Amino acid sequence: MESYRLRWRRKRLLARSLLRRRELRPVSVRADSLRGDPMLLFATLRNEKVRLPYFLQYYRDLGVNHFLIVDNDSDDGSREYLARQPDVSLWTTPASYKRSRFGVDWMMALLRRYGHGRWCLTVDVDEFLIYPFCETRPLRALTDWLDAGGIRAFSAMLLDMYPKGPLQDQPYHEGQNPFEIAQWFDSGNYTISRNWAYGNLWIQGGPRTRTFFAGNPRSAPALNKVPLVKWDRSYAYVSSTHMLLPRGLNLVFDEWGGEKASGCLLHAKFLDTFAVKAREEMARGEHYAQSREYRAYQEGLKDQPDFWCKWSEKYINWRQLEILGLMSKGNWA
Image (tube, rainbow, N blue to C red; front, side, top):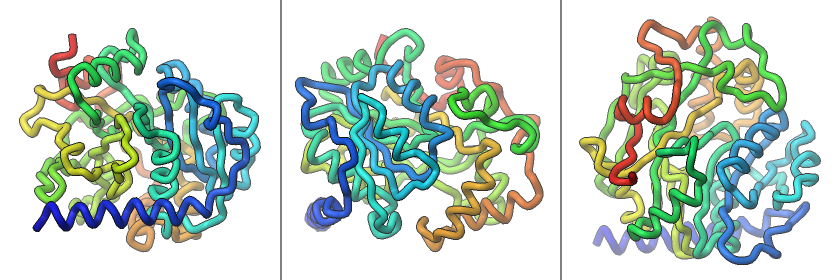
């Protein structure tokens, strides 16, 4: 009965994405000419021009061949900037972010059209993938190893990064590496529970929980993600990139740590631009649960919080994260 219910849910999600595809207007679509097996990245954004130069260069350096991006009616020059990039295919829409399941329906429409049979990375523009040996091996080396093992999905824990001191004291400049500022993370302070319905782990904690959700930690954002998938047009993201259907794709974490290869998504949300972004998103009201998360951010930012604490750890490299148990190289040597 449970398998039957999940199959019907997947069919409904796929149907939704086909309907929402009509909301996308092409701006500069170059993906139709892609041949072979390119490494693809998918993203949805609004008013993120200040982040885009470093974001694009970071993933180009990892080996992404083409970016497929939906611009949700930006008015800060993001759309114009992206349209000039030769390795970007761009669509735009003024439609509701909330009614598109927070951009997931739009992403699934593009994944179905362009990602079938290809390795696809789906991330936000403030998320930067770290995987084993990423300093010396391109993303293609990781996906070749996953292919050799018959592994279809690669998980990553979202790791919130932050500066030492109030956010507004260290201004971020367009094109800058955000981790020159946001150098710190919580090495512990995480809880893990099993989502039995979908087979994935649910991870919460870190600086957002202790700063904005201390009184109600169960309402804190989830940190488990499955951003890298050998896509098939029958797949569906259920909740952002937190989990997928078929649910076998979610069996990418080892509950006791260490056996299955995994990565981290360094999350560069907490820069001096964050307060403005939080106000904008609160005013739009286009986020989950009546923008409950952004309401908590806006309230917490009134006191100009310093995320840094005596247990904060300065980021060095992926090996440090593996030692701390936040990611694993598994048996990839």
